Structures are given as structure tokens and as C-alpha cells.
Image (cartoon, rainbow, N blue to C red; front, side):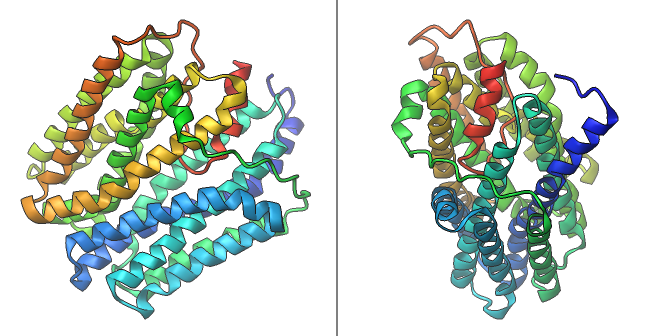
Length: 416
């Protein structure tokens, strides 16, 4: 249904403005802490394995937050839960320069990961309760644009934050605290608490073993690059400001991939789209390593190419799994896929950083390439097991932010 008048459009934007503003502020805070911790750890003399441990700790907290947040909302309500989660994230950020040691930092990163997952769960539950079937498409489009835009801006923020400096962590903490204001000051009534989806990992495997493998590889790829990518960049000679553009190029490449890859995924067998995309990811990994000494402009282009070939893996895998799910299963399927994504993301930074420490910077992309090679082999094997579905759910970019994604995007798929 199209927006027919400027007044309707204005009401639509105003109704969701507080939620979307909170998303932007959260992205700036959460998207900036990972690269900042990596660069700060290098400056403070942490080993690469210890830096990887920080990235893994973030995803441990993230998973716990996804599981705990719906239950806390049911106990204290949306607004109190959101305030509690953001306060927890701010405390974790502010405490960094009070106790400079990798183990306490890992505990702080569990707190910030839990905070982000919990805050996103509240926002997405609030948004899902506020949208109607007529506004769902526009709301999801706006949410995806804000999510990607905030993530891109967060990477660029690293270029102006000095590593291992209390002011840098204060800036991120203030941004996290500011995310409370839009929801705290809104006049919109708090929605009813949605039912908590059961966590049934076996459901995802039952619907599509290939989708499970795909989201694990997506977790490995994204977590390794985002959390350990700054270590790689500094090892190959990029300055801090250049690292910001290097990481931002990855996000931009992923954003640009959504339309062409979505077009392919809606028209061709999604198993083959995954296979060819993983082959392209292996190629882009090799190109990124070979071009590491060709100057910063080439490094930015190769990072964008890497993002283009790897960023859509999660969304294609989720779409493929939804092809074999019923409408009633989609919320729990989303939670199950997020579980497997977290499995890959928790292990990845620690393994990748250890490989870099032992074998050098190219080991990061070799590790990612091996994961995609495994996905190709498994995809070829699965393509022989059963035919694909002729009627497919529409491809949609799916942010990996909370278990609530299934509730928000499941209804959008059912309408299409």
C-alpha cells in the first residue's frame, strides 16, 4: 500500500523516529567498540590472541542478551529493560580505562555485547508491535537502511578516536547513554510483551542443514573481519584513519550487494547462489591478501569486494531456510539461525587472531577462505539430496541483531 499524502508520510516518520534514532546511536556505540578495542589492545601490548578473546567475549554476551532480553521485558517492561541494557553497556565502556587488562576487558565486552543484544531486542519488539500490515514494508526498509547506515558511520568513527584513551571510550559511552533518550521521552505507550520464542536449534537443521552451515560461515566471516580486521590492517601498514575506511568499505560493499544478490536469490536456486557466492568470497579473500601492498585505495576496493561477496551469506541462508518453514515456525527458526550464527561468531575471533599471531596477516583470509570452501563442498552435497522449492519466500536483508528478527520479517515474507 502506497503512502498517499504527505501528512500520512509525516505521521509514519514521526511515529518511528524515536526507535530509529536509538538504533543509529546504538550502532555508533556498538559498532565502534570492537575496532577500538583491537587498536587499543595493540597499543597496550596485548597479544593477538588476547585481542581475539575480546571479540569472542562480545558474541558470548550478545548471545546471552538475545536469550535473556525477552524474559526481562516480560518482568519489568520495555522501557525499564532498555534503560537497564544501555546502562550496562555504558558501564562496560567506561570501565575500560579504569582496569587495563585483557581478562577484565573480556568481561566488559560480555557486558557490552549483552547490552547491545538486549537493547535491540527491545527496539525490535516495540517496532513490531507498532507496525501494521500496511506500514510493514516501509518500516522494514527504513530499519534496514538505518542499520546499515549506522554501521557504516561507526566504522568511520574509528578514524577520529584515539586508541587506549579514556576520551574515546567516554565518547562511545555517551553515545550509548544518549540512545536512552528517544525512547524515554516518547509519548507512545509501551506495547504488550511478545511471547518468547523457544530456542530449538534442531528446527533450523530440520528445515535446511545448508542454511545452518551458511549462517555459521557468515558468523565466522563477519566476526573475524570486524573484530580482528584492525589487527590485519595495522600489520599490513594501514594507519588508524585508513583502517576506518578499510572497515567501512567492507560494510559499504555488503550494502551494495543486497539488490543484485537478492535478485539472483529470488530467481535461481539459492543453493547455487550460496555456492557461487562462497567461491567469489574465496577469490576476494585471495585478492585482498595479494593487494595488501598496493596502496590504500586498492585496499579499500578489495575490502569492499570482500564485503560484497560475504555480507549476503546470512540473508541468503535465512531465506533458503524459510523456504522450507511454515508461517508458525518462522519466529523460532530465526532464533535457531541466530544461535548457529553466534556459534561461528564466538569461536572465530579467537581462532583468527591466533592464526595471525602464528602465521602472519594472510592467515586471517586463509581461515575465512577455508570456511567458505567447506560451505561449497557441503552445498554441492546437499544439492543432491532433495530438490529446491519452486515457490520461494522473498529475499530480504536480515540484520543479525536479536531473536525478534523472525517476528518482524516473518510477517513480511508471509505477505509476499
